[in-house]
Image (cartoon, rainbow, N blue to C red):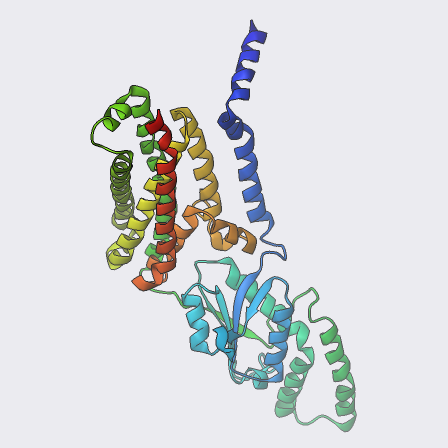
Length: 421
């Protein structure tokens, strides 16, 4: 009897492809996604975008720039767009505010002249890292690489600066001492050029750097709450729309759909009405989520109402259309549940609902743009974190509108089987 039950269970699993995917495929997909995210963070393929502003134009700043460009873990930008003009501080800060790079390194004027005198009583000139601290890893990695590059690429300049400071305080070197120093410096310079891209890092001697949060504001903590509200809200919105879209399957099984189509109601009208209802419920669902964030976690909702309304309307519309296309694709409630679970969890993992995309590798971030979640979350991040004006939301809104039209078109084509029946 037990063997019969086992055989029956195996045959049921063998016939149900969705159950097979839930049992065997979905765990592998999730393992692969998170293994790629975490295993790739320390690899050369996980490159940090960084802009460099050279205000000093000295030999030292040239060596620092050259060393950073050779780092395989960085993707360096030094010019402003297609113009090819060198970046200035304003343009570098704009890149950070717009989300084009997480860090801009500003090498200030006078750094080369004062380099090597720090620690000997001279005034300190600091390199500034203009950073978007929503990515907490990038500024620290760039800071560490900056220290490494400076100390491995310019030990001779450090020695020269120290010798100048020594002579100012203790008197000039003797001719024999000067000859020894002049003999040693070329060897030190050659050694530095040979190890500029090698391992190891120096201490802070001769270099001071500070991280400047260019996104700082009184509402910053609340703005980050909005990111998590959007991530969780979009994921559960997709589940809600997929589940509610299943009402079509219930109407098919009960015969209600056939009776409706025998009246003056067309399938196009029926799908449009259901899409509008799901979109309105989805808008309300996200509004409740963000209102809760405002009440409990100080989310600055009412400071960003226009952007929130635009993004929520576009997101809810696309999610409602996705729910309908899944419902018309599935043959039963059970199949709809399995399909929606696989698709939504995969999109949520890749798109940033479960793990921020800016902490993923460059390749994984590109994969995230294939998902519904990735575009929706990018739009909410622009609204609440970057304080972007409405017109800057056009890429995200355009993609979501196109997805809405594509999903509705797909649902209408798939629903033809019920008209034929």
